Amino acid sequence: MRYCLLPILIALRRARWLRAACKWACAFALVICIASPSRGQGDLIEQANDALTKGDYNTAITKYDQLIRRYPKLAPAYLNRALAYQRKGDYDKAIANYNEAIRLEPASANTYHNRGNAFQLKGDLNAALADYDKAIQLDPKVANAYGDRGNLYTSRGKLTEAIRDFDEAIRLDPQNPLEYFARGYAYQQKGDFDKAIADLDKAIQLNPALGPVYYNRALAYEFKGNYEKAIEDYGASIRLHFNEALALSDRGRCYRLKGDYKRALEDFSEAIKLDPKLLAAYHNRAITYEANGDYEKAIAEYKQAIGLDAKNASSYNGLAWILSTSPNDRARDGKKAVEYANKACLLSEWKDPNMVDTLAAAYAENSDYEQAIKWATQYLETPNLSEKETPGARSRLALYQAHKPYHRDK
Image (cartoon, rainbow, N blue to C red):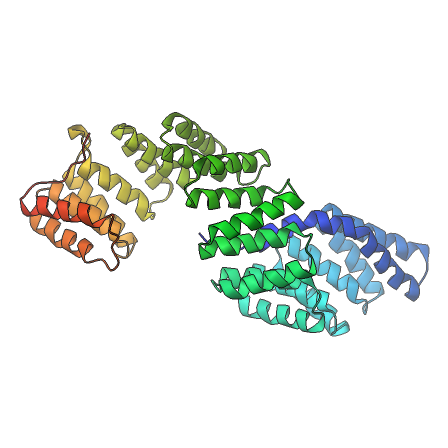
């Protein structure tokens, strides 16, 4: 799973930004005082900066508006107003203010860097990349510019370039846990889980209160099959209130993989209580009910998932597999299985071979062996079908050729 780290990194940087805010406010005040040393203007600057640091963005914008009306050539006022708009999620207005700040101070690496963030958050990655490049050209020692460019490369799947940028960010700022976090995420996307865990360990050593770091380390441990460590880290993420519902669902999945169905179901239920629309929790709970032999509850769970998202192919596929292959006679329904399996294949645009395998089983359960053989054969022709899956697929095809459906063992 790949996602954009920038919103998380910006949120985590906020504490560092707040600690630096007083220094920035003093520097800003000095600029104003050179223009006019009156007490009134100094109070306005203080009010604007205070509102920005407290997250009262509407008040901050109003104060910066007043400031800009008095001093229309003051670049830091546009820069700070841009930050306020950016944090409100109004990226177009943020970019317009960064544009004006750059027009007034075209050599400001900080402004290009921040405009790059606004472009990246807006989804204009080409413009963001150009701004990060310009920021680094103007000041090659801005560690966060390398980090945010690295995040952009990660989101594009250019992991070698991303890791190179994170290396430079860490060289410039070796005590910044966020750069280790970001590089660890890039290693994780690359499939190098040992290096990912090493970086995430370092991030936690530097700051043990970062929930996203524990969450990502849990994922890395889970990919390595170390479910105990993953459960521990998902627990830390939950305690630190990061992605609580999703972390509960993921921890429940690890309990299920360990065979602890009771704790798994408890976590999935708690996740759904926190987020009743979390599809992953319903899927996980359905799989757990199925693994525990409670097919009727599993069927009901998949139907709930379809009710939440009628375009999710996995829900239809999971339901069709139970209706086709359950060892419980009362749970099977060949006609419905064919309907749901076809729906899954259509929604996935016939690109998921596992759904083709389910379709074959559904046709067999519905006694349409010609179609079952057709789709089972196509599944076996899947490029790079794993050695683990091939024997079972051949065994199922043999059943269909003998005009027998495939039912799992009890």
